[in-house]
Image (tube, rainbow, N blue to C red; front, side, top):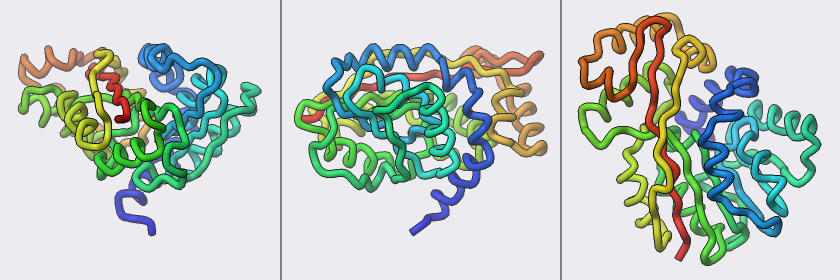
Length: 256
């Protein structure tokens, strides 16, 4: 059954699918190399990539894995991922339509679960983490990379307001401390932040990729322009050319 949240995400990302194939943030961001290094694959692992989008993470991990399965709820994104895999000659990655909160895979069937730049769309992140823990073998790991909110409540509110103006399917940028607690609640014996960084965003490219309506772009620019000094410093806000930086983390959970 398609929920309102699912329909919203599918609508947003069907329109944006082709734009994501040329997004340098997603295709070659430093965080992708950090995630691949942290994965420490040896060639024998089965990997699941939740919210694969156009497949950049799955395709980066595939050469070091036995098999990678990339899932997404938006068919148009999966079509782009399959085309990209064919273009790159990657034969051990397959892409399937599935929901991270209800995975169609048996217990203990993967060695690693990856999730990059999509967790802020999860309506029920605990359900996704429980499902990830279920399909991981004992001792298996989950690596989650995403933008996160500041621990400061005011900066948290500001960031999520900015994100929602830009993308109506946005749910929440969680705080790093919240992700660690959620991992610990969902079957992971250990959880820790492996890396902290920030992604620098060109404003025009950022809204173009998501087809943000002009009225929302105007509101977004005004919100950034009127930010107080603490907010401007926290998010490296600049006015011309306009843009900002969003904090990111890589969180690792190890299944009990």
